[in-house]
Image 1: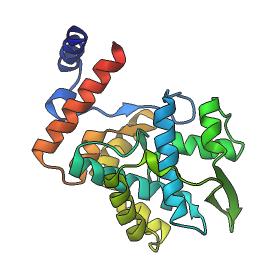
Image 2 (image 1 turned 120 degrees about the horizontal axis):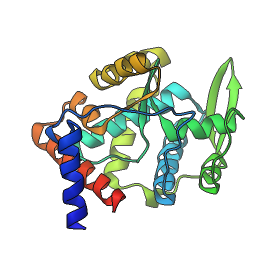
Image 3 (image 1 turned 180 degrees about the vertical axis):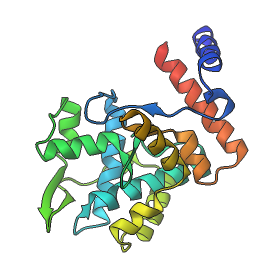
Image 4 (image 1 turned 120 degrees about the vertical axis):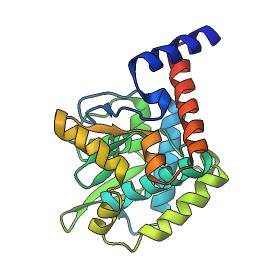
Length: 228
């Protein structure tokens, strides 16, 4: 395991800027590229989404849902050096979009296929209805609170309260931070959706140099383990 991790770290140092704290954005199309998720990762994303929906009981549009998820994810990285859930945020026109969650919602709309039984367990927990021309998401199941830590809940509560009464396009503007701008600029060059890295997200949120180093190390180790 150590040899594998060392080899991967050397590969990163040689081929990218990630190990020196200036990660290159990773380009992925949320419609054409499959990002494999474990059952555990999907369950955590599902719990996060359902928790937000339970606290916005009349349903929520995509912008409000996605921005609560983004701001909460960003603050959790800034404070604790770890994400709430393993959903990659893509830089889209109206701000960051959680790729897996968005794909699941599009599947509910009938616009893309449900890719797996695990995704179906996610889509079965949600409803999407069109209200006044907007997609409104509601919950069909209760959140499994065992999936969420105390720090997850604390930060989600904070951002639900901050975002719920803000107009959608104001939220969109709020989410256009430096991390989004960097990834969006790359998208415009390539014509592909670009992932906002956790390092960039945390930096834009005001993370300290020490915490950025923690995030960098954790992400490097995670990628090393994925290769072994």
